[in-house]
Length: 341
Image 1 (cartoon, rainbow, N blue to C red):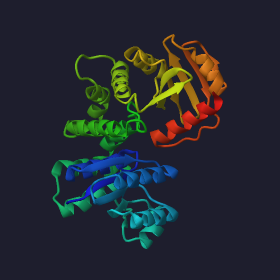
Image 2 (image 1 turned 180 degrees about the vertical axis):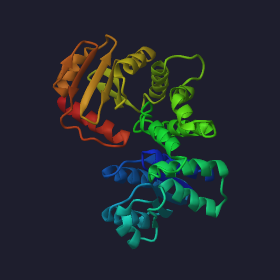
Image 3 (image 1 turned 180 degrees about the horizontal axis):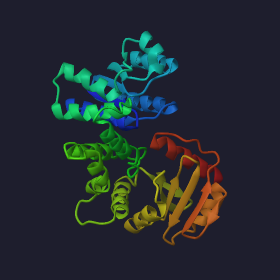
Image 4 (image 1 turned 90 degrees about the vertical axis):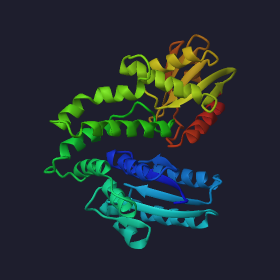
């Protein structure tokens, strides 16, 4: 297949499992994940930008486990039709609310009797070939996603669902590729327990170890410290892209990073050329950290009507509007800081 695939899917077990299926059958594929509402539009526009900037001429946009509104479906089809690349659009979903769109568009495939993962698997298995191990995993996802309590795979599906919903250690907005890699790792490791006696219980007992295995590369440590090191390494690799400034001070901007005190201080210790660490959240709050080089309580007061301590402060960016692409978030914050400076 001489196409580059762009796979947009939901952010739950079914959504990521659809992508695990496509990853089994294709090598040249980029993953995007979205919840409902305007986040779908932002992700779709990001895909189109990537297609326009690509040297490849043929592309497939696959959307799974997300039902579109009629307005979105019309908009997406229109944008694909005017794209100067050859783009094939395909949506595989199981939500009944998409029936109107399924009736109107040939590229919109809907089947409410199966979860999106099973629809995706059956679709590609019919074209290429079935895979026994992958098929077992698909049955686990299907059992829990459409709530087949009488199926033997149901309890395993519940544990897998919890694995995905609890996988908050790698930020999806800042590090989408690494987030996908992390969730894939959790679900791939989970499959190793599927044949155990009392498999759901054994898998549940091992969820902490499964998480640590992803982050542990040399010596063992607490999960918190391993996650902090992993995130600090990612931030360090991306610090030029994520750099902001306040007057003559250089900082880094994160989004919903979590555990700001640990990660913020670890980053500043590892990167002494930076003066402050700033995290903005979807609730418009900001947290700031420094290692003595700048009084972040003054920054918090200036840009967020906040305050606190010299090295740890917080505030609120009242004009901040939540977004789903990191560059859009950063541009907003830079504008707000410039207007308040």
